[in-house]
Every structure is written in C-alpha cells, then in structure tokens.
Amino acid sequence: MSRSERIVGALAAIALLVAAGPAAAQSKYHLGQKATPEQIAGWDIDVRPDGAGLPAGQGSVSQGNDIYDAQCASCHGTFGESNTYLALTGVKTKLNYATTLYDYINRAMPFPHSKSLSADEVYAVTAYVLNLSDVVPADFVADRDSLPKVEMPYRDRVKPYSGLMSVDGKADVQNTACMQNCEKEVKVTASLPAGFVENLYGDIRDNFRGLATMNKLAPPVTSAPVEVAGGLELIQKHGCVVCHAVDKKIVGPAFRSVADKYRDNADARAQLIRKIRDGGSGAWGTVPMPPQTEPSDADLATVVEWLSTLPGEK
Image (tube, rainbow, N blue to C red; front, side):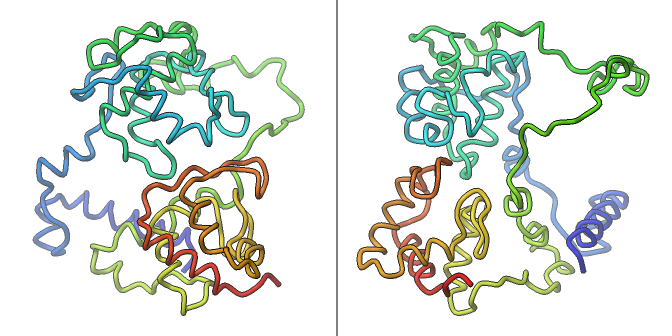
C-alpha cells in the first residue's frame, strides 16, 4: 500500500467515525473513549488577536535574551538576522498582532522540540523577539495584559487576500488583482528541503497506534540494519530524522556520512555526543544544528553507538 493510499484510508476511517458520532463509534466499533476536560485543554492552546487564550505568566526582554541564546540563536542567528531560517528582525512587517507571535512560538518552537517551553519562557522569548524588531523597549515585560496592547507597526498593511481568506469576501476566482500584467516566468526563490515533510511527520500509522485496525498493519520498512533498531528508534523519537536520513543528505548529512567521517577517530564517541548536545555549524556546511537538550545522556550514547555500527557509504 502506497503512502497516499494509507493517508486516504486513514482519513476515510476518521470520516466514518465522525459521521457515526462519538457514542456510536464507541459502542459499534469499540474504538476510542470520551475526551476528558484535561485532554481537551491540552489541545485548546490557540491565542486570539485580542489576547483570548493567553495563559497566566510573564517574561521580560532580558529573560528572553538568555532563553533565545540557548534555544533559538543556533537557527535564527544571534540577533535574529539568519539568512538560512526566518529572519526574526523582520517580524514587525509580517504580523498584524503581537499575540500571533506568542501563539506560534508556543505551538512550534523550539524546533524540533515544540511545546517544550513554559508559559513564562514563551512570554520572555516573545518580548525579546519584539525588542529585536524595535517594536517594544528593552524594559518591556510581556503578559496576558501587556501583549495584546502592543501595536505592530504594519498592523493595517498586512491584510488577507479578499475572498481567499476573508469569511465575508467574494470568491477569490472573481478577484482580478492577479489577472493583469501577469508574470510570464515563475522563479522559485525558496523551497523546503527534499524529504522535509515526510521526515517531519513520519509514518502516518504512528498517529493511530491506538486503533486496533491500524495496529494490524506492518511496521514501517527501514533500510537501517536490524541490529541497531534501538538507535534508530531514538533518532525517530527525538526528531533527528527531520533533518537527517540514513543514506542521503536532507538538511544535514546522512548518518552514514557521519559514521564514515568519525570511523577511525578514537575520540569519536565523546566528540559526537558533545556535538549533538551543544549543536553548532561549520563541520557540514553553514546550516546550523540546534542544541539537543532533550535526549538523556544514555540516549545520546545509544545513538552514537548506533552510528558507529552503520556500514560505510557505497
């Protein structure tokens, strides 16, 4: 079964369950359980432009500086000036509301360990990034009261396309804004790395392990040696496969390339553990790798041992 067929099948199953209703699904298919208020609260984290949804807590620009240096600078640059990832010094021209910045950081950052920051830390990083763009002063403290009051400089200039994103607008096919003086050639100026989405989200079946029918499917096929499955499981768990693959370069080098480079190095294990833990750039190009603070020392040792057993590149 192809990846697209699996996705279609999973979506069809979900549609059937939704159509039957939660009670019917539980009684007829013996699947799932009623979501508790605590479980719902874990997903209900959106923050509205007016600040609705902001949690209790606070964070200052100075506090955000320290958190940014530790969690964000390796990708976005020391002063938010990165040319590889989003330049944070330009957020003031891209956002209507400061609360949107909080919402995004809270949901998606730091990559690849999203939602690992506390509310206070998110407030602090939000304050620091706004200060980098000269939107707020250096003594600004962000909280659920002060953040919605921040006036973004381009608030009235950043507008949705009429019809395309506006609830009360006309259908976008009637908009003539792009129907005159059209470009004859399209130039691609930026794109996601090859395999980025596939490696970011992995096998869709992993999202349905609680469903009996999905559990009957065969496990994902991998080209990694069976004897190092423990290390492979850890690199998937900690998000390493977002930027690396076993046999080919994605954003970072292939794991086999790393293994080859350090194969005859007596200090390879200690050096690799330190490099993974601290992050950095330069060894494999200019694209930085964020510090990996989440894996335990034991996990890092297992991953490095797994790397050492990989066969050489063909």
